[in-house]
Structure formats: structure tokens, C-alpha cells
View (cartoon, rainbow, N blue to C red):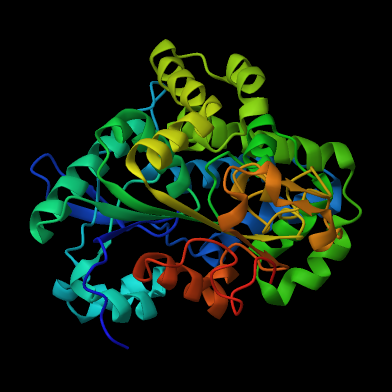
Length: 417
């Protein structure tokens, strides 16, 4: 494949689990890797077995509840957030140079996170960048770092423009960037891939504690290890619902206190329609509320943010998503068409996507911001989009082919897949 020299440099804004983050000392020296969290749940089996047996044999669940809360707090502590949205610990994302300058391990990691080998072949690895960031920092803090990264990439390439590929939570960061720095222009193409740009019902459910309690026994038995799972589930089925409910909501409270309740990026993943009621209930810190209100206000005019890019600066926007799957079992909102993580109405930037099972017949692309450049992949889950050859081809062409502008540009890459 001939390299397209006219392409702008490309910056990937990855999803929530795709950036490496270290805890550092005051001089910036790395102390330990904290994200992605490398938790060996089997290491907690010994701690859980006693309280679990007490629950099964005597129907006393307090010890198991307290132990699970303690474990949850321990797991969350490295990435915990203060009430004002700042990080509890000194964290720093592990940075990567342009892909052509990455060593073998770095390159292997980037391609594992975002398999864009075909794009790199089309435009050259020297034009492909991976923007690492702390997934739990405030969106505008990350957007400021992204703006500095954009300036660096432009300088390195002598380019006036860059293109973005925003993946999952990367859509939230992109929204903050467009609000804070979009007036500067300097963008060429924007590709949203399974983006949480308009939030997700899953985040609504987690923030509200709206969970499916029937999923809890399976999760608890899984923590005890595969060998014990089948027998554990048999006993867990006999546990009173009130005990399961108390355990579940106690752990959710730990999540809120250590991370969810104060994490600006996770609040950014709450859908616009649910933000006000949830924020009024759970955000108590004025500094945090000011930031999350600012973000939600900007996202309320997401169409305006994008219109400025397309009409004033000629930016082309492309959207790719999976749909027609239920949200993960923990979410109590059933029948929401999604890729398992991000609800399709959000990932499509506003298209009408019917309940799970409706298929393409339940989809109206015209309601989305970019109906002519949105691709739908039926039954493809959140991570599975990266394994779809046609999705990767759309991304490659969107960047490397100036004539590729819509779902009609290439009959081999139809809108519905």
C-alpha cells in the first residue's frame, strides 16, 4: 500500500483502560503501576472464605459485606479521587512518542490497545500518536494536556492540523477539548469509535446504584475462583435478597466515596438527561460541581461544538459503534441497545436506536449529528469493534482517502454491518 503523504498527523485518544498510569514520588520518579489495575482476585479467596461460609451456614452477612468493602477500598485506593475531583495520589500517565519512534514493547502495547496497523501502513507510523492520560482526572485537566500534546505533534510534523480518533471515554475528553480549545481550529478529521461522548446508561445506573441484584451471586462466586463457582452459586441462591442488597449497596457506596462520586471523567459519562438529578444528589463539593456543571453545560450544546468544527473549519466527522446488545448484567436498565458498555444512542451521537433485538429496523440514523457518516455494527461488543475488519477499513479510509466522506463513498463499507 502506498503511503498517503497528505494525511494530517493522527492522535488516538484512548478509552478508560488503555493508558498506563504510574504513581510517582514528588520528583516524578515512578513508584508503581496503578492503572490498568492488576488485581488478582484469587489472592482474596482466603480472606473471603470464612465470611462466605458464615453467610451460607448461619445467614450472617455482615462479615462478608465488611470484607468486600475493605477489599474494594484497597483496590480503588491507588486511583482514588478527592472530594474536589483532584487525585488522592500523585499519578502520571506513561507517555509514548510517535509510533515510528516507539521501541518494540511500546509499539506492541499501542497496537494491542488500538490495532491500527493498516492505518499506520497507509499514512506512515511517523504520523500516528497515542495520547496517554489518567482516565480518572478531570476532563478539562486532561483536555489541557491534550492541547499541549496537539501543539507538540504539529511542531514535530510541521503541520497546521491534526486528526483525532476518540475511543470510548476518549469521547468525553474530546468533548472537553472541543469546548475549551475548539475555537482555535487546527483539526482535520474526527473519528468517534464506540464513544461515550453523550454518556452511557451504564454510568447512570452505577452512579444511581440502579443495579440488577440478580447478577451479584454470580459475581461473588466468581471471586472465589472457577473451581468453587458452581457450588458457590448453589448456596448463594439461598441467600436472602436483603443480604445481597445490603452487600451490593455497601460496595457501591465505597465506589462512590473513593472514586465514582468525585471523578469528573466518570461524571462526564453520565447521560445529559440524568446528570442534573444525580449531581444534585451526590456531588457535595462546590469546586467539583462547578467543573462537572461546566462540562455538562457544554455537552448540552454538543451539536454547536461540532457545528463550529464542521462549518467554520471544514472538519469531517465519522462515527462507528456497535449496537443491539444489552448492557452488562450489573446494569438494571434492560433492553437498552448498546455494545454492552456504551448505549448506542450515545455512541451514535444522537441517532434513534431501538431496544435490543430490534436490529437495523429499529435504527434511525437521521436523528444523529452525522447520519451520513455513521457506521453501525450489529451485535458487536465494546472491545469487539477493534476486531471488525470493516470498522478498521472505515477508520483507515477516513484518514487516508480525501474522497471518503460518507457511508456512500465505498459500497464495500456499508452503513449497517
